[in-house]
Amino acid sequence: MPDKRVVVLRPDELSPDDVKMWREIRTESGAPANPFLDPAFTRAVGRVRPGTRVAVLLGDGSPVGYFPYEAGPWGRGRAVGLGVSDSQGAVSRPGIRLDARRLLRACGLSSWEFDNLEAGQGWFEPYAAEELASPVVDLAEGYERYAEGLRERSPGFLRQTLAKERRLARRVGEVRFDPDCRDPRALEALMAWKSAQYRRTGRRDRFAQEWITRLVGLLGESEDRECRGVLSVLYAADRPVAAHFGLRSRTVLSWWFPAYDRACARYSPGLVLQLRMLRAAAADGVETVDLGSGPARYKESLKTRDLRVYEGAVVRPVPGGAVHWLGREPARAARRFVRNRPRLAGAAARTLEELGRLRER
Image (tube, rainbow, N blue to C red; front, side, top):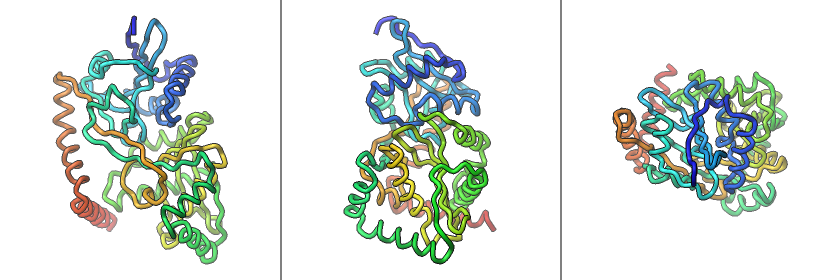
């Protein structure tokens, strides 16, 4: 590729032509229209994370790729929205070749960390420390066809969930579903349930981090059809009992923040919500629901297949790279050791839950 160079911009410096070109390149690549890899997501993160940048890759003076990232002290870089983004990497024209470490050097980075690198990112995959399964639900043939397959794969799952929905209606009140809710009180309820879940399971409360709360608010206000937040709510007796805030494009819905009212746990309102959402998503043109990496029993029941994503880091042999390695890699190796041993992972999860209960006392 002649005349190859890199220009680094802030997300708000991207022109309308850049946004158009980014999306055209993404479409040309044939990859799914995952909203986390859309320029609108990077722009939203840029409003709450000042270190967000975009490297524009030029070939013969025209953009041939875009690499969004966040830059921190010592040149330590990370994927945009690391910790909450479910699809990461660069967007580039097919056939473009670039050395990952040279790209980092052009961006002034000593390292670049990722935890949900999209498959097919040939520049970065050699630096992956672990390959993870990211389950998805295929809806291209419609919800009824999906439901038929669900009955075959998970006998009893659909029947039991629908029975619980009927019990919820009888014992709590009339059940209704709002696929695109604009009530801020419902979003507040979702955040409160999710924060309680994080504390109860001994995990870091993401909604205690201001930038994540602000990011959700910004995406929830977006009207961009290629990347907007969608709040879906299940009601019983006109009060929310389960909700989900996700990110969607025209054809892909990314499962993001689900939660439910524990007072109604016996009725599995989260599963009832999921089935209602899948039906509504299929009717609205969604072809793929990305459930995200990470083990969960409900994902195994609902999925039709798995995508592959990767966790790791590109590290340059410079002082800042050593800082990254000392700060992150030992902990990453410890998590990987536990995750690959189911009995040990189960014991660790139980310990986290007990710590969470102690915090609530």
